Image (cartoon, rainbow, N blue to C red; front, side):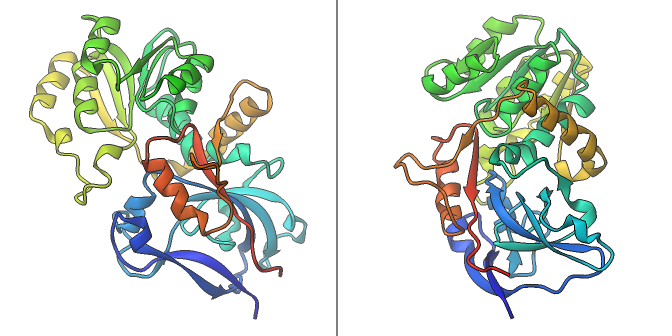
Length: 344
């Protein structure tokens, strides 16, 4: 029987290297509505370490890890048309750090081809598009603040908001990232390493405050953003990366008592956003993102190698890619090219 390699978590911890290991498994037998996908690229996400820690319900170890990828259909179940074999697809599915994976056909997102530029449109792009349009309900002319704006989802959120006619401010940590954000449309950039975030937000927004905040950092950044949320403002929490590695996974600043008063007096709101609760919105927004990308209206930045110049290729490099993302040196979407060692 043919075999393939995949990454599984065998210990629950945010230390991905300690939690996970590469194992060999038999190529699975398909049920009637399933497909077998030969993986080509996988996306790296900050929350991969939340998965390895069992925070998303995976308590029984070992379990497969990896959240998103693109590849081509290698085999199909009896109820899936044979014509699907060879078709390029994207997928958001548990177990994407694998050379092959079994997925229900209904969860495959058709793609024009296998170019890696589509990877950022999955978890990162859909999070940006759905949360800004469906949750934050952005309106042309509104002021939008994006934290960690040069990251995988941040740089797409900037462009989604700009395409919608909003004034966009982004935060980042280096001058290089600042120049990148200006190149994709940021009206103003705050380098929180060289500028005081609270002071800069007060200078930019003054007493009126900001309409929409796309927040993924947490901690002091969350507090600073909340203080500048305007009347009827909306703050969408899509993550809190500052707390992911501390073991508890809970950012206590989100429970700060001052938050209630600020929300009450401004009729503003804070909502959490978890992508998998919005599956019904995937097809519409994915189609829009693919169209924007192919028409040159959306530019994605792929980060495919560490600062030492080593390209992320093969399952072994997933561990390096996650370390690189958490080094703070990455820009855009970190991806890994998968090279299956088995040919079916």
